Image (cartoon, rainbow, N blue to C red; front, top):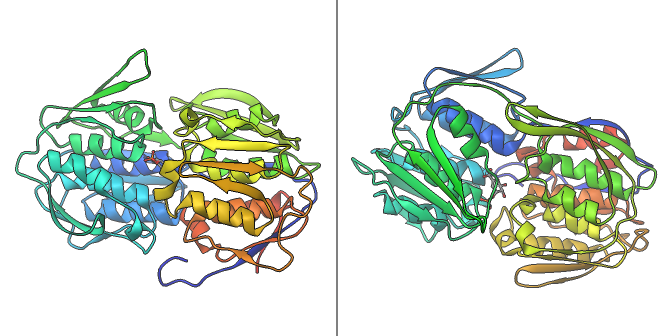
Length: 450
Ligand code: S3P
């Protein structure tokens, strides 16, 4: 439940074959970066297809408080940037609600400025560790003036001249990488980030498009070294945001699981740092046809035709975690309908998301009759191909722990299980995918607010 708002339970029931075309909302990561870089660039940035979710409205509000002017006109978002190095001190705390990525990215962007930035969030966000972002910021000279434990709220103040650092990411995290690079925008000299395994690369791509002096070197073992010359000029851009593969994941898995389904999902971002779920499902036997692959604004985009398929369990390697990270909840649901066992490894990062996602998935699966085992960083799910016995007659609702992805994943489960699947709260879905219910219903899904 979002702070102060009411819980909205929801229920999903076994559905007839899904059909039709789904147009999913804009990619969350690209939308974040478009607003942030537009807000710190010089001149005007025009954004078409921006994700209009609660998280995004928080970012827009924060960027306005930092000096950007943002308005909507004719379906586009238009940002007049403050200019690199010229952000204004926010007059009030920046409240990010449930928006973890926004909070972390802005901690980097604004934290190095020589003014106080206070960042607050909702109950879920205030439980998540932020030390991973504060460590590199402290090395740049940023002072953490107030904080409780390793959690929000936090007050940051940058030094007169922040120091460029060379930072080896201790965890594979695009948020931490991006926080360091965005901080580097206002640091003289070269800020270097070294990532042992590639994570989503929207920040690097977009910084380059905005004219930042950024270079990337890739070693044979896959280590990437990213160097950014700070204090350069960024120029406003026109951006077309492709559809979010993390949102596409829900209609996609639903169509695979519900017998008789045949749907098309249009305009999906196919950046290789994001397509781990599609690759895994294809290895499990999914019928996913990639139609009309094309380049939109420098990104790979395609339409996906998805038909009901009998899946077979596989072992998903830990190396695939960065490109699948937000899709494990719905992949676990797919595994619940596969023949045999699916084991997913390298899942330790799931424990520090909007909820302890690994435990939340396992608990929800068990509540609905799925045989699964949870380890420190792995999950094994034994599937039941026809969904027989799955779901919950007793109307026991899956606890979603303020986590939108848990909510949507279990609603997808209910579309193919013998019995309905209920969730305690669907209100958080609006943080990332406000059209979810309507879009799924338009394909024929039997979902309703309980
Ligand atoms: C995101 C990065 C990912 C992902 C999150 C969005 C981003 O987290 O889970 O939803 O936009 O940078 P990591 O920081 O673990 O890569």
